[in-house]
Image (cartoon, rainbow, N blue to C red; front, side, top):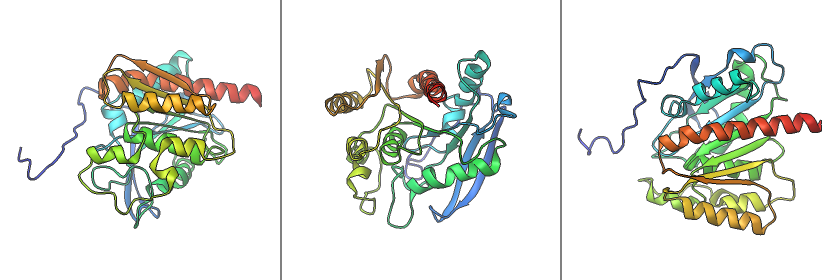
Length: 274
């Protein structure tokens, strides 16, 4: 392979079954371009009113198919639902806007990757998935750059997100500089768009349930530990976990089960409180 042509190549794992997945391409006003989404709706979701929607955000270099065809997200969700460990929910796995090596899920000068996720995807879910409505609980999780996006969104839109989780999160936009080839000169410079901690501590509204997870051999581990300590110092309730593993799909695909169980618990708790 000629490295002068392709800086990075991400390829799906052919051993992972694609049963039940649906792929959609839409014209996004927020992005001012086309965007792709992989959807999974389990059979148990049929007839469920206000079906919960879990949005899974990929990391740098990836795209909409990564969580399913590298991380087995749909197969993990299906198993947990069949076991009764997770209520029926739809999975939406979007591309991030496909800017450079990764958009950061923030607003740029000529497009808004954040608005694509928080405003447009819930509308798309209602259009494409039976049972999804404006009242459907919205859950957001992401890995690496996607963790940066998920936690920031929870801080900025706490009334709209029922729970959020990160796996191996980037915690500051500046950390993406070591991962992406392009500079970030036209990215939003708002404090809450540059720092997870700022986003989570910047409002006066109670935050949704939060889960932060990172592998012990992950280069992001110290940044995640620092975020954990700062959230404790600010009195922000969250679940924090570490475990054996690195910044890779072996860790993320295994840890997604804990993330989805966390989402299920958050949904059941909300129902009990209603």
